[in-house]
Length: 240
Image 1 (tube, rainbow, N blue to C red):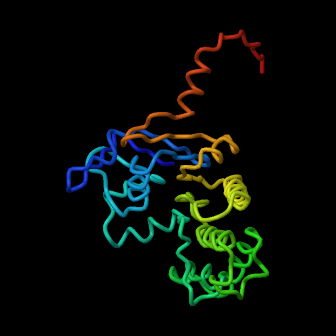
Image 2: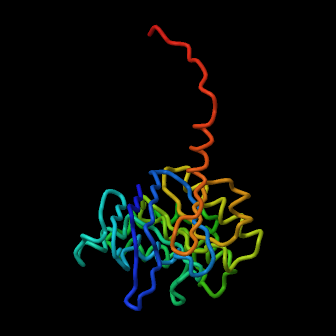
């Protein structure tokens, strides 16, 4: 679960990036966060990944307040969040297999478990045949799928995808979103930050729009409002 409660973020130069944000994302939800450049989307990611802290308000992620963590506790917290970046951030001197395995090795996982889980992740993203290739031999879409496999390898509770389709063609954009949808069906919360409205409309998930550091639109609120306006129907009472 992700909870932003009256969260405001003001930078040292006086810029108010977020202004009294209130958002709740439940376990297992798939949510698009949309908005123009400078709206505050990147600041939200930085708060979620503990790269920054709120100036005011309360942020809770998976039952933890990141602001209260010590430096030693932050790495463990981050293992509960898989991040997929627009620019892939793969290590060019490592093979596809080792780029994915690296995320497990740094947390001390053993060789047998690494092999099993990396093999499974490669199958999920359709890149088993590319395990020994290096990133510069892959297309943009393939590199993004490697990045996605790396993000899920430590079984995070949340996946944050920051403009995951920004460097791939339209067809591959759909494939990446389908993979994220499959991951979500396994109970992992997925938060996709994007400016591509066509994808939002195609996949019909919850959309939270940020404008000027504020929530300007949330389809969850709209749905709740529509439900409240429906006439109440009588219910048949069970005798069980």
